[in-house]
Length: 615
Picture (cartoon, rainbow, N blue to C red):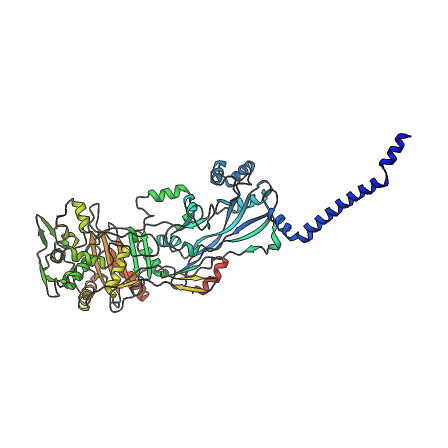
């Protein structure tokens, strides 16, 4: 009976009311929390929840296209696929499966990911993947956590042109470059312009990356787009470049030099546009497009003909007799001689205990400056440089742009060499260096060196009196703003009296068009071409052949320099090449028949929009 009373007391109405009140309060609190979280703070927590399953995916921009001066497409883009890995999400088993798909050792993948271990950084471990690789990755996606594929564009070279060293190539960014990238634009595995225009105009060509934010599952794999694909930052394609290059002239130059070592550079002397530039031997840019096998790169690197070396802008060969115009201009301007001054040429010249022969040991007799240029009399210029002196000669060599970089926009350029007093003092270990070295400098030999690019600019300056900074790119087109930026080259006047220019230009005309001129054999019937031959001695082998020219004589629109290494006489080897190119450019006449260069339709879809605007 006592126990029964106790149970009744425990289950009394007061206790029930207290219990129900507690339950009611707890329920009300829970309901209030749900209302707060779902309604009041619903959007905030929705975003937080969404963020837990969102992964930004890069949308690669299309790299800018490249066109010639007439709107002919030279470089476009084509689709390519990458394999991208998030190191934090991939598993050892997935690495093994991926290695099997890519047909590489697991060590390769592990080494690629090692610098980013534990990171959410998206690492491109394989560029230019095959359709078979992409198919297997999609098929096995549930067993490849942290592995996705994405799209990018790779270069498409059209029309059969090489333009190898001018265009340059892109390659995968190096770790050191990534570390120096303060803009944080690049990600591991990205392509970056390295040489030529691809390197110099990287910031313009690369575009701006876009991002798509996608929902992912616990394995980090894509489930769906967020907000039906509206959460996308569109990529901005790269700017397109319009070049001064004439595709047809370039193609002809490459053909004429196909079996030679050397270079051709042609410019418009009125504005510095590079019309054609080729260095031979060269290589196929397609070999550097996408993945470049190490074996292939090493073969090019170790090739004794040095196809990776840009002979148009990096060589430092003596210019031979083409440099006689520097001595002549200097002596005339400084009144060391005049047009009536003469020297005697018995076929040789003795200075100290050394005898220097004239060109082909010909005795030209008493000769003035114009005839000395026409027949390329060495003895005249041996004596002339000794009379004018080293300082005057050097002053005018620098004035014509030698011994310094021209500033061309492909980035890869050497300054050549114009010696100084300090240079010779160091070479001979004395301030009183032997003045006999001047004799060789008088005919463009000895301790000096030039590039074909410098020589083309020099030829243009001889024809116009102006020295332009050469440039390959004429304009840059922004497809987003529809705006075109035109390149404004630097220029300087060569301060020679009009009477001096008259003598120099009359002499250059006679070299090509007057009987006895060293380039008389390559005159063009209805084109007044002016030029100068040069044969530069080479202690290691056959002489190097030079020819520089400009045309038409009264208003030059093309200036050209041709260098053929170890080829012999400039008049016999390089002059015919230059003459053919000048005739083709001015008159459209070729001495052989080839398929014409035409625009290509193999263009990335987004770049199709650029083409009409460029043209």
